[in-house]
Length: 255
Image (cartoon, rainbow, N blue to C red; front, top):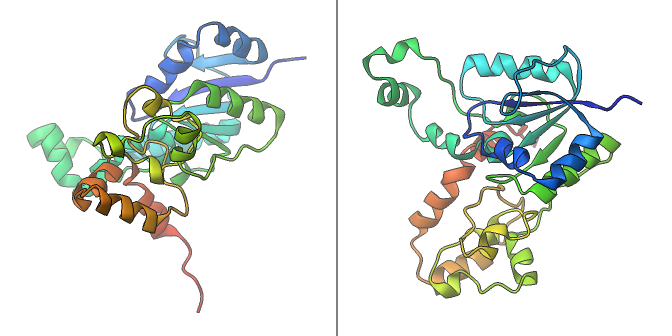
């Protein structure tokens, strides 16, 4: 029986999520035993066939060429997996949306900025249909393997919609707020096993916001530790600016 043809693609990103996959170690052998990698610019020069079973896409969509390219990839693939914060929620590239496009182009390209194309940064699902998501910056490999298995088996995978704090408490970590640090764990989707906090770092919100955050609880924490609201907003803005596009494009409720 032929193995599923899987291809990796990248758009605007640091390619760190692809490196996570390339550096999986012994687990990579198990993954390669189940799939046929036909395209992966990080590790091979071959170009895959016109039709593939699974496209795994890193990076956000930031110019017209990328819009057309992701549409062609979507046409080639039976299943599309967005992986990494840039692909799933726009990531740090979304901060571009805080400014006028021409101002950004001038800042980056100087007087010849008009020769360089740019559009509002979007996550992959904001341009084409996405079947599965692997959140994080970079991706958490155990979750990536879990999602890939679900995709290959045709089973659903739901990103946990409760906060990182749940996993953090299960891992018996000391709360970052008690250590004098501002952490976005209370409003960020779980699924990473509180990876950053386990390694003495704060949560930066790279997995996206939970759909129904405990706003009153968050306000109580902010007030208890006398944290400036501007600081919290700026931290959330680092990864989650493209969330505003989803909110803006939601169908308006009929009265």
